[in-house]
Image (cartoon, rainbow, N blue to C red):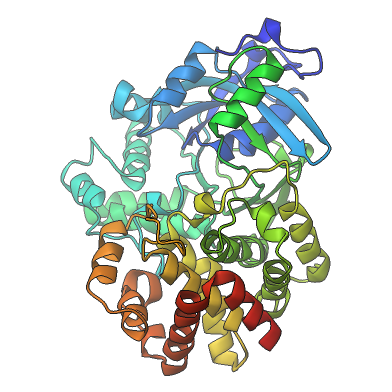
Length: 486
C-alpha cells in the first residue's frame, strides 16, 4: 500500500487542500489511461484552486477501486523518458465505487448528486455497445437486451447513464454533460447515439429530454500509457519505498482537445494544458489515423515479427520507414486538419515511439482489433478507393490483423486473441481455408467491414496477396518488400 510519508523527497505531493474538493465529476472506467491523463489535468488544476473532484467508477473489476480506497484515494503517476523520470501523487479523487461490489444503485445515486456536472468515461470502444462501422447502438448486444427489460438495473454503459439522466430529470435536478474520452472519431456523437437510441426504445419522452438538455462534448486524447507489468511494479516499489498497486506510468507527452459544449459548467482545463475548441473532429481524425493507425499497423506486424515493444519496432528500419510512410502518404491525405505541419507531427510520433523507457507492448495495442480497425485504418482505405490512390500500407496493416487473429504466431505458438468478437473470429478462422477464403471470411464481418470492402475485388486481391506473403515469408520480409515496392 502506498505510504505517503515514506516517499522520496523528489516525489511531488498534492500542493492543495484536498478537503476543499467537491465531487463534481463522475468518471466511469478507472483504467490506466484515465489515471495518467484526465485525472492528471484536473490534479494540476486543483493546484490552481479548482474544487472539481472525481468520483471514480469501475463497473467490473473491483481490485483497483479497493486498493484506491485503502490509499485514501491517492496514487502515483510517473512520467518516463529515455534519460529521466518524474513521479507525482495524484490527489484529485474524492470517492470511488465498484459497480458489482457496491451495486449499480450506488453508482446511479452518485451520478444523481446535485453537484455532479460531468459524467465522463474511458471504457474502450466495446463499452458503448454499438456497431463500430455505423456508430449506431447494437440493440442485440446482451447488455442492451437486458437493459431494455430492466432499465432500473442496467448493465451497459448507455443504460447506466440513461438511468441517471432519468433520475435527475424526475428529481428536477440540472442535467450533466456526458463526455467520452475514448479513442473513437466523433466520440461525443457515438455516445449520444447510443444513449438517445436506447432511450427511444425505453421512453420517447426521455429521448426528447436528452436531445434538448444534455450535451455530449467530443474529445481527442493523446498519451502513450503502457500497461503496468510485474517488473514495472517491482522497480517502482524499490524506488518509492512502498508499493502502489494503483500506480501508472506514461510518456511525457500530453494532449487533450475538448469540444467546449458543457451544459452545467466545467473545470478550466485549458489552464492545465488542455485545448478547448469548437470542433474536435479534425484533431480526432489526425490522431486516430496517424498515431493510432500506425500503432495498430506496428502492433500486428511487429507482434508477428517477434517484437515485444513499439520501441523494438523502431529499431527495424523497414518497419520504422513503413510507419512513417503510412502516416504521411496514406493517412495524412485523408485528413481535414488545417494549419498543422503533418510532417513535423509524424516525426514527433516516431520520436515518441522510440522512447525506450515506455514499454508499450505490441500485444496490448493489438487487443480489441474489431473495434479499432474501422476508424484507424478502414475509413482511410475507403477514402483512397474513392480517390483512386494507393493504400497498400493500410491494407498491409489489415492483412497483419488477419494473420494475427489466426491465433498462431510465426513460430507456431498459440496467440490468445482478446476481442469482443473473439468467438466469431475463431469460428471464421476455423471454417475457412487459408489465403483468399480466409480473407473473405474475415471481410464478411459486417459490423467491422460493412458490405463494400468484401465486394471490392481489388481489396480482396491485395489483402490475399499480403496475407499469403505474411504466411510464406513472415512479417519482416513482407514489410521490407512492400516498402521497397512503393
